[in-house]
Image (tube, rainbow, N blue to C red; front, side, top):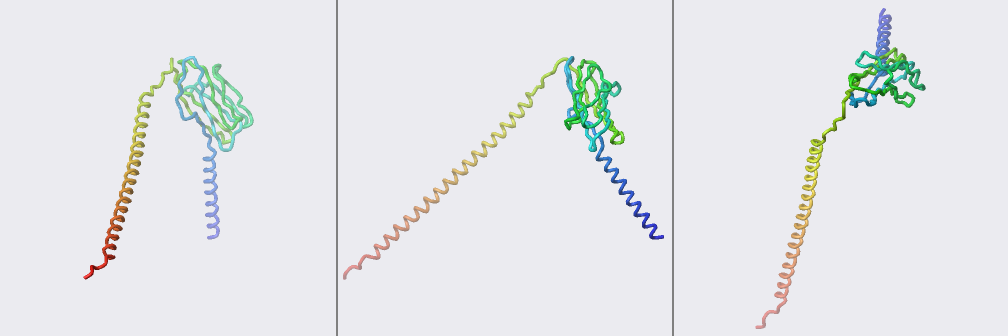
Length: 223
């Protein structure tokens, strides 16, 4: 009876370990979609703008489907990719939208380009589904702002800050250099003084010694 209980416990432990391994494996192969770090894109009215989208998957993909939505509702582009060796196939596209990404250069790029006007401002979502990962799905959203003209960024404050910081750093470096030079000059001056004192002391001792010697060498006066 005890042996049977031990076997059952061992079996449950192995099953738990297997389930944990499957869970960790599923986390490792999770599909991810990204539109880049800049989630806001500015575009001139009447110009062509690029909306980036890249997907990643650890185990690859097969018959992958991707869709671009405007404001989460309107479909503006839909495509599929059979495998890594093939380019995307268009299934549906707004007349103003075209695919500019590629998947045969190790990029998994499904970015699009489109002509825009003021009415196109809003959120654009790139959605991907990968049947090879048990139909795993993921999406990312980018915001488009359409303007009449691009306003130049005023970098005056930035230049002032950079100039001030650069001036302070330069001043600190100059102070350190001057300090080092002064310390070096003082050190050499002290060394010269020591040499001078040593030389003077040697001369005096020599002269005193010679005088004493001459005095001792004098013959005593005759009686």
